[in-house]
Length: 125
Image (cartoon, rainbow, N blue to C red; front, side, top):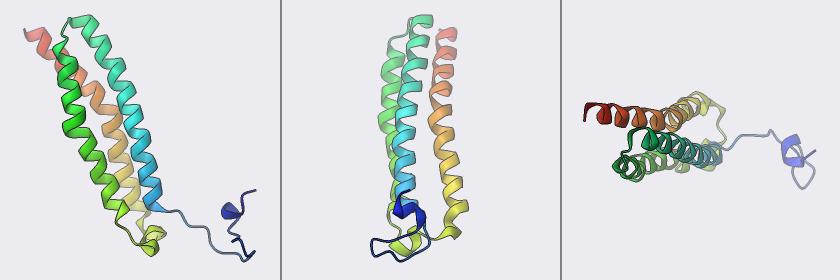
């Protein structure tokens, strides 16, 4: 088993294993952007075939660049600025879980929400 996971340092002394909230949020942001992009492509391509609106893809791309990337960066920035001591503080777990939930709700919900909005606009026109 990995020594770091067991709490053993390179000198063999035991220490409590602590989660680094900075790295965890950075990983969550990276994975959320990948999932968001994949869902966005899937939902947008399906909607374009259904409605014939090619401009919807451009609108969706603008939303990605203007909205999602900066929002994800703000999540990451908030956690990246922690000191080493704060980054291992278990008291930050509830705040981390809250930010993690919001991040994933946006990553999963927004592609479908944007697609539904564009379909509604197409239905009106």
